[in-house]
Image (cartoon, rainbow, N blue to C red):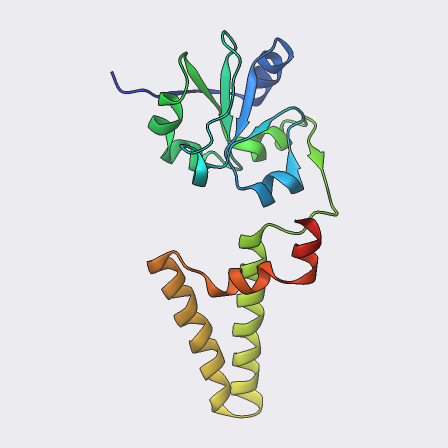
Length: 175
């Protein structure tokens, strides 16, 4: 039988956590630092096999991400990592928040890298369009360059903008 994750609603997860279950958050460290459920263990999916979370024997394991998409896409990998039934927070942290359950927030932590890339790319595209419309059609090249960079990042997995943003002062201070 193929391992799978059994979905649980947020209120059921909260109840199980109060009885000793372990919540494993598979989001990236920058996402976890900004917001997470109190007591959750950070085990980023990008390095999951290299650093599996240490879960005490006999405790239930519940996995989560932000929306449930990452856990759904990796359910076999995650379920295979534990020696017991594995569960998933149905709807992820978004559902947890909508249920009115508490989250630990660190507003001083920088925005998640993906959001920083989205903001920077969006601003560059808008700037290129504005320059192209108001000053010179050459400004459209900026938008084309950003589009090409995003396409390259999607195809190769290498995002130059994320690498550049990682060196920004607000990101270095958090590290």
